[in-house]
Image (cartoon, rainbow, N blue to C red; front, side):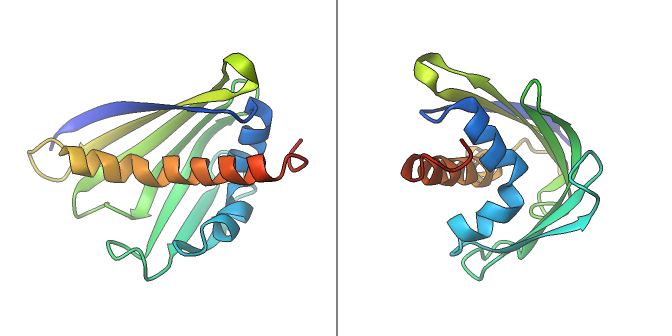
Length: 161
C-alpha cells in the first residue's frame, strides 16, 4: 500500500458565492441536467445534506470503468467554503485504491471570480504509487463538474445570484 496526496488548482470567472451554491450545495440537482451524457442520476442515499450524508452518482454507459460512485460528506463549511468527502463505494475502490477522499476549498479571486484547490488523499491497493493517468482520473470528474457548473452560471447570470 502507498499512501499519498496531490493537489490541483483552477480558477473560475464566476463569483465565489454563486459557484459554491450551485457547484457544491446544489450539485446533486444540477449534475444530471448539466452532464446528462455522463451522469444518469444522483441519489441522496442517507442524510440531510450535512456531514454524514451519503450520495450516489450513477453514471451512463459512457463511463465504462464503473457504474457509480457513492460518497460520504465528511465536512461542509459554508463560511470558509470547504467541502470534504470520502468515496465509500464504487469508482476506483478495490481495483486501484483502498481508499480515497477529496477536499475542495474555494476562495475569492481577483476580478470577482473564484479559485479552487482540490486535494486528493489516497491509499493504493498495491505497492506502486499512482501514475499520472490515474491522478488525472481522480481529478477529472470533480473539475469537470465544476467547469460544467461554471458554464451554466455564465450562461444564466440570474441563477444562484
